Image: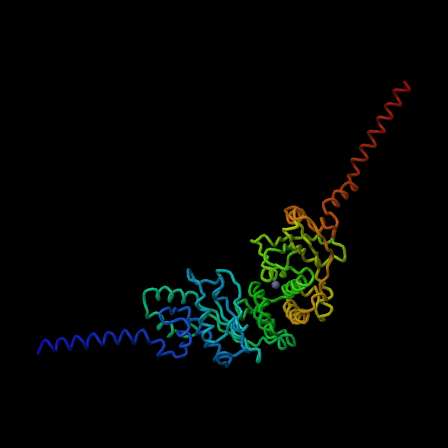
Length: 443
Ligand SMILES: [Zn+2]
């Protein structure tokens, strides 16, 4: 009898242990039903603190901006899963936390995964295009690292992480209205917020990405913007040049076929990398700087020179090319109330005001790039000559006859302006020789 009781006691004891373990593992779902979509998406066995972080950021945003899952008027932005790291941990799991909780995705066109370097802060932002409200959340890297270390060996780390207060998980939670109408009609208050870095230094990225997205950002432009981190008139000029080249120098097989020489480089060149796959590493993009002196030597019609595009044909061994320029003066004039001077007016609101205004204005030219872009020259050459254009120490604009040879011009100037002292000395020596000769002859 005693033996039976012992067995019954042991069974009860074991059952209670399993119940405790079971309830510990399920506690997150039970206590936090809001993370259920996340768990359905990633599977509970694979759940990490980083998933929960993305979900937490999303839940705070949904409460603060007042939106439900699958709201197409809301844009989600984050650098999670690009290069941002927390110590030794990569951050892509946080991206899944956002996607599963808000329903925002690349396929829906309402998720921008911004490119940042490996040591950038990990952040999330959500923008409602109806209200213009944007909420920005920056993760606390130190706290995250502690929990990521813990979760390797301790399942309880996840439940404990869920217990943390929002301001323990995030070092910054800021909500601002950044609708373009609001910012452009009353720029001063936003200028103060820019100076105060309300979005942790990402203010310019936020105001341009969110407002251009609200205008309708195509997927290819979105990918261009992801690489570039923000949308500026320079980047948009690159998108427009790409559209222009697709029309003017169409390529039946784009892969590895265009060679681009960027002279001089600006934000535009990031657009080509995404659209044409003309990566530097693929040896399809060559970048050459023009000094202030060299720029001065550009003739008036080539002042806005941007790129040389060459369509290579390996079969015939030739390349067909165009040199294109972007008419900034016309763009400023058509946009109105902006000028070249504003570009560097960093001590006032003018620098971001003109960029945002131009960004919005240039969206109207996406399907008529020829209004702002011109072909300076068309040419055909052997691929060996193309190699020469790309090579170090060669100014392709001189080779193509767009500008004067700057080195030659300098030598010529030097010859003309030879030291007058040397000339006087030479004349003196000749006169002296003549005088001596005359004297000797007379003698
Ligand atoms: Zn830019």
